[in-house]
Structures are given as structure tokens and as C-alpha cells.
Length: 122
Image (cartoon, rainbow, N blue to C red; front, side, top):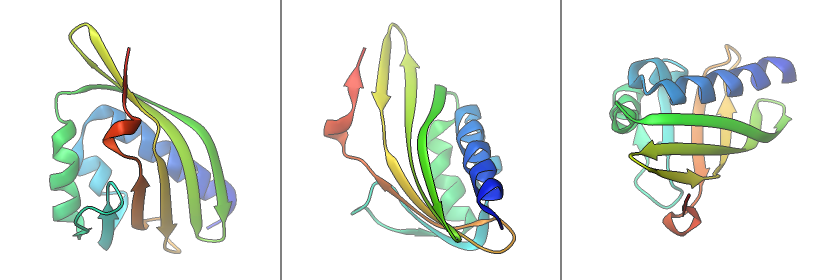
């Protein structure tokens, strides 16, 4: 995996999250991957648990935008924006995710740094 490959996976991840397709997002993870979103919450392990987590996005109107990314070897930290539209309100949060990847480009771990107090309403 090269830096361009990992950057492409990050973009694919954000695009897939925006679709709300939990199975497609979970498919980007290794079978035994872990997810901690937000950091400090219970760690989810394995694709089924990860798909269940992303299932909360089903039916949501989401957009994502990559703000910046840093890749070092098979690890990356990236800052992005998620805008969720619900009726006339837009909820905006800008997490920083830290991911590790395997040699095949699958996500082996993800930790999301954000708190409810980071969310704004527009």
C-alpha cells in the first residue's frame, strides 16, 4: 500500500459513508477490524458489529468532505466534515479519524476523535 492508495481508500470511505450503505462501509474493513467512534466509547470488533454501527446512517441525508489527511506507512489521520440534513436543519461535525490499514488496503482499526459538543447546527 502506497500513500496514494491509502488516500484513495480514505476518499472511498468518506464517499461510502455519505451513501448510508452500512454493508458497503463495513466491506472496507478487515474481517477482524476494530472501530471506536467516538474515542472512549465501546470498541466494536468485526464486520458485523461495524455494519451495525454504520446502520445508523441508513436513510440519512449526508455529505462528507475531506479537509486534510496525513499518511505514514500503513496509518493515516484525517480531518473531515460531515453534514447531516434533517428537515430545515443541518448538523455539522468535523471529526479526526485515525486508521490503520493492512497490506490489502483494508481498514484494520478506526478511532474517531470528536465529542457531541463539537457538533454545530446551521
